[in-house]
Length: 272
Length: 272
Image (cartoon, rainbow over all chains, first blue to last red):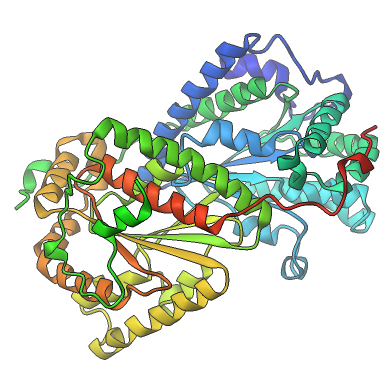
């Protein structure tokens, strides 16, 4: 499925209001068949690997993939499904948790800038600077006027990156409240998943509408021409992976990395 | 194949002289069958993934895998073969190339220490601090007496890490001079591999015996009880991967990470 057909469902057009509640978390029309979606994901992830190899050979630009979503929305699963074929040689994942004291002693974009992938690499942010207008806003961890200024600051920061060789893809993994309930329950039911369950997650769940409102504002104000947001129906993991891998792949194809031509001829050398 | 049987072929026993020339680069007796070796690698890499997940859940210790070897010895291929199943969520690869100005402005272990994997993660060094007693020695990039002091410094550094929760595995990928010739020629013959060919590699090849001597000294003096060296026959990629994945897996099994037990009961929570 081509990017423009996917984007008809998932893209937040710059200037448009995101309207999270009107977005379907299932979206059965996109990649309707599970087996085919799995095949798409698998083929895409191999093709992504091949293009990343060329990007690494070129070493002139990078791809940054931002994954945002509420607990259990599938950020880790997306990394596995879309990027394991590429592997740790080509992909660098940075999780952004609660900031350390050192990080809090700097501006909120400091740690983010430090984690921007170097040329040739695909960087994945598992959560990101958007937490600074999401959890920070909902939990009132910074003054309201500082948060208010951040949307514009984030847009300027992302514009800077895109003008300096970093293509940015931003995905909001959109799951329904019912689906989250099921996934949290799974973590409670399976002893080997207990470590993933954090009682604090229930506090965030109780703030569901506040988070939804904060997401709507962020998705609306920070979906720009240079770094648009995509809202990915994520209740079905296989559909989520098919969608995201398709967007990543077509983006890399458009970037069109090529193996560089050396300034020597193979016949110049004899291996002895 | 159990670790002790593999180690009978690959381990440099602490105190023993490494004798690189007496080590077989093929070692047909270890994992003699290619298809079976491939199956071993595949099963091992999945089991490594499962154990890394537990190590991440525990978050009390880390595994550091050091890969050393001459150009084309298969360091990247090892990462792909052994660690792609684990993926970029659980594995962080750090390549050590020519030091930057900033790195040279510090002692040689500074950049290395900064790249040590955090608790829960498998870190892979693609080249390492051993370059500071290999290329640096062969190319005389530091005074001889400074290099001479480094073996002991490295042993002390690695002991510090192992005493602080970092298990260290060190693999020297041992290929023959003929095999390197073939692999370099492949890079010259295939246009899509030209970017991997660096004319400077031939200068290093011309210094083959000097590198072998520097390796022997390093492997001999830095194979310690806390961080022994293993010399892996690497002319056959599938054998190399079967060996390394087996050593990594059995090491993780001995570390024995377990999912932590939470201080709550699942029945304490009701998801609403």
